[in-house]
Length: 413
Image (cartoon, rainbow, N blue to C red; front, side, top):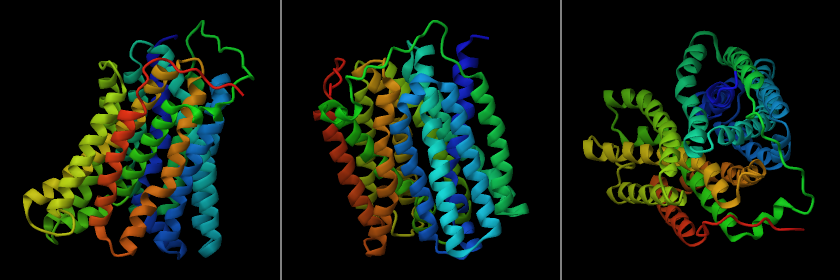
């Protein structure tokens, strides 16, 4: 069965639809905090740690993924599932600081490592099988990562409300074990592809001397940073923006699923669009300009702080969340194809993994920037001022630094 859909696309979706459930964090964050008797702020660091270790494990696992996707997919499966089951264990049998540390280790560190390795594993395989449609291929896979939130959230809420938060982790941990192990068993690189021999003359940390790579890293970081600053506060933004009426209850339940769907749509839409463009970097210019404009509109109309019954202001708020989610997802899916255009396919897993280190740092800064602004009394207007400016900075970086369309030479030691 050497079919590209069976050997590449399907296992990629199985893996990414499992690990992408990390973005369901807001669905059960408060429940965990109440269960173990800690503040939501302290519990929230588990998500930040998960994203940090996702990015850093991807940065350092590129060499292993290049050599053996079977090994990397199995390690990802074991770490991710162990992290989920361990989180359930500490919630069930401990409380207070002990439970908090256990959740940090399981959900943050162990699961985060599984996330990073699992995220990276299918990407090069997809681009090898779909060599003429790299953007579409990676978009399909990474769409699964974004779609996981829309798929898993209703099940998580159902299990939480019926048999409790602990069993949610146990049941879904076993479901994801079956999905990821099946993906591990069937993923395969195309026949005839032989990985090139390792060249010890190259050191990938020297990539940070390359202007193009540095530009890609910065704009990728800024896109994630700004996205997390708003996406992790979706529920609170809706509660603030909509007046306390019956429509508020409906919007709180509907908006997360809608934005998750647009997050997934951005992942396949923007990356597929990049296949049609002369330069894939133009996709990022579209993302940054659209997000900067809608952030500015939301800021100057004060759509979030009003809590108004104005339909126009409510539309602006929803449009803000939709466009940010579109750009957030599209930034992820277009990245591998952009890197392959600039640096070639030979060492793409290593280069992509190194670029994902931007995700690690954005995972620590994005939502915490919003937390700090809100604590200091800046409100969501302060958050919008920051994101509007940073999206503009990202656009300038995209236009001025990521300009070289030829394949770059990797730096020697």
